[in-house]
Length: 228
Image 1 (cartoon, rainbow, N blue to C red):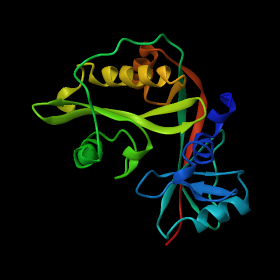
Image 2 (cartoon, helix red, strand yellow):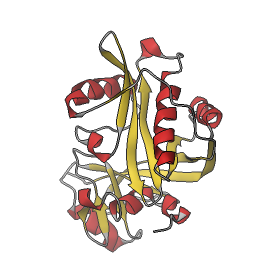
Image 3 (cartoon, helix red, strand yellow):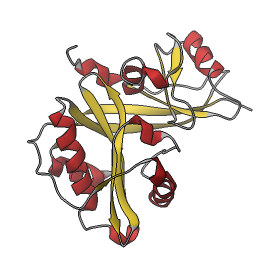
């Protein structure tokens, strides 16, 4: 099937209805990842019916994130916790050289991965997020000090996510090395790498531009919670 760039407008919906359909909870109106996999969710359209269907997939107190072109307002059935603009960036550079010194991460590494995410806050990461794609890392003296991986996937596109480095190991180019590894592997599969950063994260934007990413457009992530 030919890759359609329009899939990038609503990444969770695109993923949960194609490559990641095996993870999807829900139906044609609303879908979400299991809580222990990822916090992203999606609706076929922003309507009362779809948001009601999304609510039915959530437990009281559950929080999910919707990605879309426009922010979503709160409703009687779901509280809007936050709307934040995201820069969506797509790779259009050459195939990077593959650096050395990295390792593939496995479910046995998840406790360390969770600790690193808790320390560095690159974005939501759950115990089963590693099942979504390839995750790689760099170790120093046996300790995991940097990681990155693949999150949402759909026809022709793979998202790079959870890029982070321990504060004691920043400014050493570790994150760039790992992103280059993932970019190379994604391109070799005939897919296009993409990623999201908060629009106000200027430093990250400049880094990814140096690595070969270009800003495609601004999306919004809306955080919704089912009231208790």
